Image 1 (cartoon, helix red, strand yellow):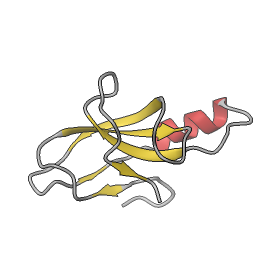
Image 2: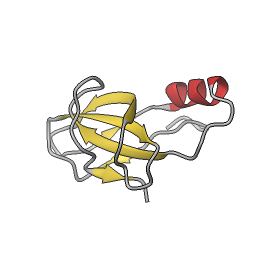
Image 3: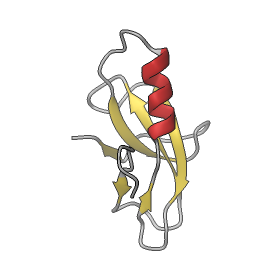
Image 4: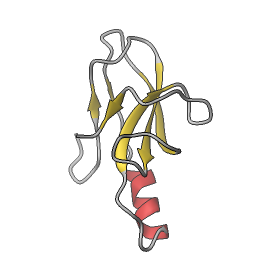
Length: 88
């Protein structure tokens, strides 16, 4: 794994399903989600997602950003469900 990147290793998800890694303004993971990266899990229900580019862009473009929470939600960047995993 390259150093300096954000590579969440997601496990415990449904196998061979589409998910989106997103940011939520709410600590509970609720509210409007800002998608960072879409991915599909492998047959074991895991995936490695590289989100350093989208996060870097948000940090550079968004002066004064409030704290956000990483979440994983089923679906795609444009059509997703409620988060199934929320950053602790």
